[in-house]
Amino acid sequence: MSNLDNVDRQLLRLLQNDGRRTVLDLAQRVGLSPTGASLRIKRLFEEGVIRAVRAVLDPSKIGRGTLVFVEVRLDHTAPHVFDRFAEAVSKAPEILECHMVVGGFDYLIKARISDMAVFQEFLQRVILSLPGVRETHTYTSIADVKPDALLPI
Image 1 (cartoon, rainbow, N blue to C red):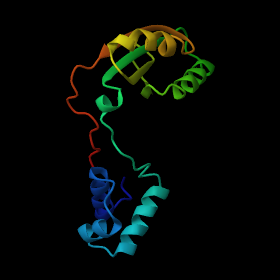
Image 2: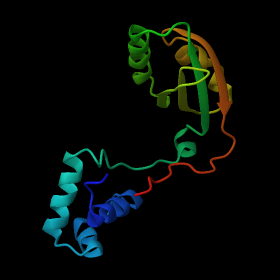
Image 3: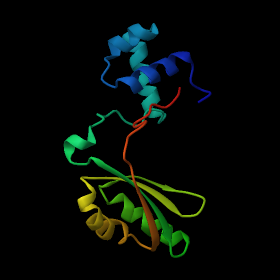
């Protein structure tokens, strides 16, 4: 992030808070011409600093009100097992995030489901069918304390 100047950082903060801002609004807030702001934003996309602009949905209003975290331990760790696991995870729409971790287990999965009544089906159909799964531990979130946090810039 050392190649970002103060104007870049301001633009990133503004866009992270509200991705629907117009280029004119952004330009006025950071003291650039609309063309200058547009070129900077384009560069930030091209460099991969900004990966996407999208709406943040209310999970409970679209039938995904229950958040679960699942620790997954694989039966053995080898590159081909990791590859097969990652490919299968990428095809499961309920899984929002999956992180390979260091510690007492291999992966941490974050998933959204409608409610705990469907959890057993989700566990069997999705999680336990993932390649190489030996053991799982599940944690259900009972309160969103700090969801969708903005990155410090």
